[in-house]
Length: 393
Image (cartoon, rainbow, N blue to C red; front, side, top):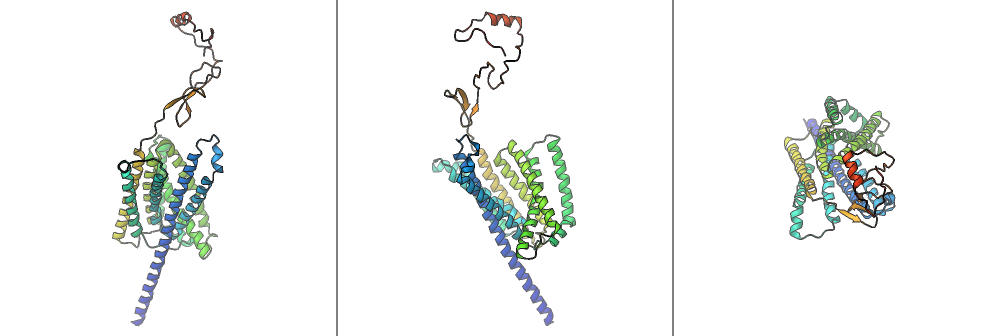
């Protein structure tokens, strides 16, 4: 009887130690993810500001000599490194929704870089949705961090291989491949250039990306702190999959950016990628197996509130009236241009009578006119300010 009690005490002590270790690792991973997202948003704002300051220079490579641009690049590298390491410490379902921190910080930095003077009432009226979205996003972040999954296993090569050959992931991978091929067929063959379809492709690739990023990051950190994991083939399989999916994600995002507004892309992409990342973490790493119903419901509620907050933030950005270019008659250069863009409305003469942006087709033979129009042209008086013989294009 005493031996059974002793064994129960040892088992409880081990469970408490594992829980304490998981809580510490989750805290480290969460702080690293928040810090990384903050650095990334700050770096983007700094680089954007450097491009704005150098917008008047004709040399496009001028920003390479800007200290602010290089400082932004260094901050971005540090932020991405912190995000990469955070996947090794905290569950995937906890790190993926923390991209909302980047949305909040980018919105706040936008106010700091906005050099406009508003009255208090007008400022609140214009940005009330942004304030409400930031508050909801912060509240949702607190909820899913508090009630998120707490269990976390050591990501060695043996555990990763066990998850890869497990039937839940194989079934999820099969359904994902079928869905990806169907969506890609409609996007490429049927010209269905809908934002939802493009970002669905990005999210499907992103679910594989976050799985491989967590595996690669976990094995690298474990190799530094403990036994070497880089000699196993599964590490290189995961690394190749990670790089390939990142490249294809960037390609689809670039295609979406050419067709749709960046704020709309950021909103829909955050919702899709977070949803698929949480599902991938629950299936591949089984992160919710030891969680009760209350914690799961509160975690999902926090994610839903974050989705609403990000939607309100980006909706306010889309409602801001864009700058309307107007035509300026630049007499010094002889070309009317659109203000703030430099687009030519009508090109110079250049020795040709071709109108506007048409090419010089002086060598092309003129098209014969009808008889009545030929007579009207021949009978029309010649202006004293023009040459007597005109070229015909």
